[in-house]
Length: 501
Image (cartoon, rainbow, N blue to C red; front, side):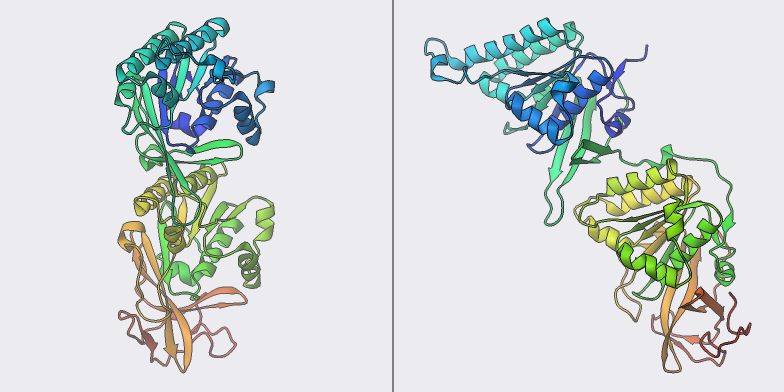
C-alpha cells in the first residue's frame, strides 16, 4: 500500500521528497542557529491546518510571544490560523521558588518536560507536532543514556497517537547526534555558508529517509519575508520533452547562412568576443526574431541594467517594450550578489515550464561565474541547466566576454564542454580603422560556413557582410584585413558585394 504523505508546506521540499513526509513518523531537522528551522516548522504546521490537521508547536528555547513575532514577520497570524503554541518552560518555573536540593535538578526537570509534552498531546490530540529544540532536552538529561531513553519514549508515544513529528536540533552538541539520527525516520540537514561578500547562502540535504525515494545532494533555499523557498537540484534526465528539431532564423539571412541555416532548437550557442564587439546586440537581434515569430523569450541579464539595454536595443531597431508589456518577452536583471545557482536554475525552469518560453539568453557567463564564487561545481550546474533546456527543445544563447580588447584573450570556461555551437566576434584593422568580424568556429547541429565576415551595428540593427578572404592573423587573435574587397562602410549603396543581409 502506498504510504500516506503530509506536505511540509514548502513545495520545493515536497518535490525533493517526491510527495512529502510519510505520515505518523518522527523526523529530525538539524541546523545551526539562523538556518531557518523554526520557520520551516511553522510552514509544516500551517500546511497541516490548511489540510484540516491540528498542530502543536512545543517550544523550550523561545517564548510563545517570540514565536508569534517571528510568524508575523512572514505575514502569518498564528492565533487567527488556530495554531497552538505550548511553552514548556514558564517564568514561574525559572523563579527562586522552583529551586530544590533533595532531588538532582536534571532528573526532575527532564521528567517534568517529557510528562508535560505527553499530557498536552493527550489533551489536544494533534496530528502534527514540532518540538523545538532538542538541545534543551539534551542539556537537561546530561547523561546520553537518559537522553536516548527519553527520546525513544517520546517517539513511541507519538507513534501510538499517530502524530507526524518534526524535532529541531541546533547542533549545539560538540559532535553530531548519531543516536538520534538512528532513531529518527528521516534526517534533513540545513546549512548556511557565510561568504566574503553578498547574502549568506543556504542549502539543505536529505541525509536519510526510510521507505521512500528522494532527491539526494545539496538543494539551495532562501529565507526571506514569507518563509522558506527551496530550489530542488536540477536533474536534466527527468525533464525530456518531445520536440521537432529545426533551424530558426536569427533575423539576418547572411548570419543564418554562416550558421548553416540558423540556430537549432534544442541546442546552445555561445557568442564569444571582447567587450563592445556586439555580442549582446546580436543576442537581442535573435530574441527579436523569436518575438516576431510569436514565440516567447526570456533574457537573464547579469552585466547590464535595464535602463541602458532597452534604449540601446530600440535605437538599433529592436523595440522590446511592447513585447514586455504583453508578457511575451521576460527580461530579468539579476543582482549578482544575491542570486544562487539553484535559484537561477529554478527561475529558468519556471519560465520554460509555466510561461512557455522557447528562447533563453544568459548574458553573461562571466558575471554568472563571478556572481556565485562560493557555489560548488558551478560549471556542472550550468551544464545540467543547458542539458535540461536542450531536452525541452529550447534555443539557448550564451554570451561570454574575453579578457582584453585585442588579441586572443583568456576564457573562463571550456567552450567544447558547454556549448553546441560557438560564434566568434573579433576586432580587426583595415585602412586605419578598427572594424569587427564574425565567424562560426563550431556547430554540432549544422554544417556551418568556415568563412569570416565583416560585422557591424547600424540603424537597421545587425549587418553581416560577404565573406572576406584576405584576413591575416585570425588564429593568433590579432586579425588584420589586407584585401581589396569593399567593406560595409565603403559608400552608402546596397551593393551586393558589400552586404549579404
